[in-house]
Image (cartoon, rainbow, N blue to C red; front, side, top):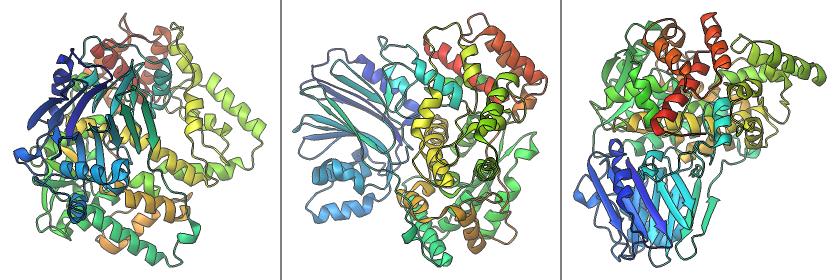
Amino acid sequence: MCGIAGIASINPQSHREWLSLGRDAMTHRGPDDAGEWWSPDGRVGLAHRRLAIIDLSPAGHQPMHDAFGNLSIVFNGEIYNFRELRDELMAKGHGFTSGSDTEVILAAYRQWGTECLMHFNGMFAFALYDAARQTVFLARDRAGEKPLFYRHDNAELRFGSELKALLADSAAPLQIDPEALDCYLSMGFVPGHLCILRGYKKLPPAHAMVFELGSGKVTVWRYWQVPEFEESAVPADEEALLDELEALLEDAVRRQLVADVPVGILLSGGVDSSLVTAMAVRHSRNVRTFSIGFTGHGELDETPHARLIARHFGTDHTELVAEPATADLMSALARQFDEPMADSSMFPTWLVSHLVRQHCTVALGGDGGDELFGGYGHYSRLLRQQRLLARVPKVLRHGVAQAAEKVLPVGVKGRNFLQGLDADLQSSLPLNSSFFDRTTRSKLLRAHASHTLVAEWTKSARVPFQSDLLQRATRLDFQDYLAEDILVKVDRASMLNSLEIRAPLLDYRLIEFAFARVPSHLKATADDKKILLKRLTSRLLPPAFDRKRKQGFSIPMASWLNAGPFRDLFWDTLTSADCMFDAATVKDLLDGQDRGRSNGERLFALVQFELWRKTYGAVL
């Protein structure tokens, strides 16, 4: 795991200082080593911060160059099948001087060109300069585990693992993009290629890009996509499907245990992390597992569930106790996250990463299981809602939804459900906002003429075309909520602690299996969820394992906002004279929280945005 930054231009660069500054703004991503390289003509600059995981020797230093001097690369991530690829490439005549996966990428590109991406199993973001072709080739992994921001302007391309690398240039523009802001206030994150700052973009997951130094032209394309469901490929015997799932998961875990530094497993005692642990003990004699307890909040304590799994498999288990989060941490996370993100579970994610890093450099987690195998409660609710709405006339549903938005105060229980009654569940999904609806967003930004309402249209355009409701919902969550919230949260919180977190369930073969071969009725029904994975637990986990438990990372937001430093921070930030949001609308939200409405996460979204805006000096 590392941090990368760079520039490619049709003109030689005399202003180079920002590159090393941007690189070192990401020291947390790679405290072990740093490097910078410029092409002889001064048109390409590559910079790197290294967290040494594979081949800890100086041979793994980056930027790395091939033996011919034509290819140069900076790489963030891990290629889990690099050993097999190395053997294949050696058989084709390629030589190697290191044991690193970075050198394998160089050889794979030399062998297959940009098609090398289809040979990689891993999480990655990299930039590769081809001096012979005068191009810079950039790519991002299929699920979007590793980030890549860029800015293309005036025949010049700048890029970095984190936005702060690009903002190290004092001349970098800092104007908020109105469309991205509207999406953030609606969804809680900025989706797709959009970036919260105007003129910047994110390379989406499963996409690649080529910049041509001769013309300044940029070409972006999708190199992989989630496969269509194949009814004919589903075996008649469910046991055969379970056999295939077990084999794929075991191989994914086996590959991701490979490292030249200590590796642990984040064991919550839930379905996903427990299955990862079950597979790990098949391939390692000394599996280290970690669980977390939160002081003063027993309802968030996962240690008893994790202890059951650890004892059953005989792992070297450590129970860590996280101290209460402080209000000051909000500002630190606002800076680290580059773009504001309204997910308060960034707090426990950071706390877990901070504690585990004291024992390991790499940790395996269970991310991806809910999106791939139907683990979220809203999947069952959607299926029940589909059944209910089929008996209610559309004109009536539309009227109720409109009335709920206009009449019921934000935060009233059931308001979101009523707004969702307008949804067409035969071909789409509910487009009502998770945080602020159109009416409330208009009020919050009524003083800003540049504000634009696009979030519902943006989300609608991103809904996958599938006849099956569950296929639509899980695929949308995979491309949006997982990629733009969960994986961003895990990457930024873990890398702030220089900890690499891997996700075996996001092995691309498991992704393709889940979407192409697992029918919806084995993912979720109106009464159950994560059905196939739970059936696998019956094979592998102890009888006492609680298969109905669903405990995600969360914080006691309501109690934090009753009194104390978090309440003070929220109220002071949102009632300050320079707050960007409409004072009367904010006051209604604050008053509603005090009256018992569920506005905590909405207020968190506004506070995170304000802390981010002030940290970076961004303006609308």
